[in-house]
Length: 293
Length: 319
Image (cartoon, rainbow over all chains, first blue to last red; front, side):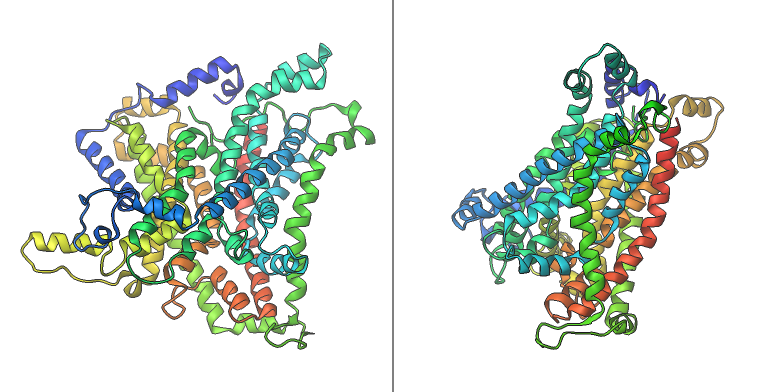
């Protein structure tokens, strides 16, 4: 079973299709189908409520009992943009995109040296990277804060970029290694025997297998950077604050703010929701560091 | 078909013995050096700094009074009432979130492993809580769901009570009355989809012929689950528990947003307590010492985690 998974792209593709909806897998009875949908809707309800409330007026959002059928409006979103959410979104996008690119730049050669042309004791290297992921970020906050303050890099997006790169690098190394390990060894060896140069091998043999992995890896890294809060809230003030900091910052006074809050929450979650839905199949693999396919 | 771990075809590094000359070795190492150096500089050096700071009496509110105090910060850390509470809260929070999410995730995964009307849509909807930004999720729970006056929970209760003729439903202040469960539930809501995804992958990697054989032999559904599915899922459950623990131990967003560690210090976990020591009390020495203790604690968890992952990994490499 395991060897078949790397056999040929065609076979793998067929397998993928079959896993989508295996006609041999048993059906749920109507009762259990009902239970499944009930549970699904229970989990989805808060998200649905958030999106629905974001399209209501403040007066309709904060009623008791709730009024889900109140008239819909775009006012909250207009208000958000007039209240300058844009710089925060741009900071988040910049921190997310640049740190993801840096991560790939560092992780792809590393993964190559851990799978296709493995160094000696490559498993030790893998576990060194992983172990850094186990150290709680909060314990690094104080020294990072002091150093960053000392070199005048507080409230600077580049500080977040460096930290997010370090935060995501182990995940990317593990994921990319698991994808590169699927490159068929026989073809690599055959290409080498035929005297194909490194670039040809990379382009013709490695890239076709690695590119979907690359996409999945960047997505996961982007999601983690986009959502990061602890460093962002403690190391930025006004210039470099990201979207999560905007969220906690704009609730200053109690009052009618629920609809606007829901609009902001929906807006900042939207990129990740879209990315996550699009890459559902790859999500597990990324979250389990490539351990589960 | 999903399989646990990618199967590289090689047994440990191929027998290219002619290449193990010094130059060949270094040529192979070059691609990984930038990442290795970057990681050491950005992730390891701060911990050395933490270790150094932890031996100082250092409060920025008392400038000029920074001096070496040896291990006295650690004495403080181990005897401080607040920190002990924080450790206990961290354990309670992490254990409840991880265990409840695994159980719920397993239930959902078993349902989604079967075919039913709209399975794909149900799966998509189910993972959405995990994709909502954690800070946004915390704010959503605090203001839109838990709020005693206009939150959805009390609002729904009120609507139901009115439906049955009562004039008003109960007004429960969820966050003040049940602070820890309030934080736990919001986190369970976010982490259950994660567990479901991992366990669903595990279920779908189950060899169909074994299940078929069990059915042929007339094994009951319970017996099949107990003796075939559960043992097969064990390593997926372990993986989910370990990864979940690593992430949930570090919970900062939800505590910061929903309860600010309160009321009192009822929901203050270690990350939040360290944050308070650092940015509210400005006791850098104590914060660093607490940080060192957290790192040591994490190393204990990580040792178990790494061992599990290593055994999965060896299985994979030796295949």
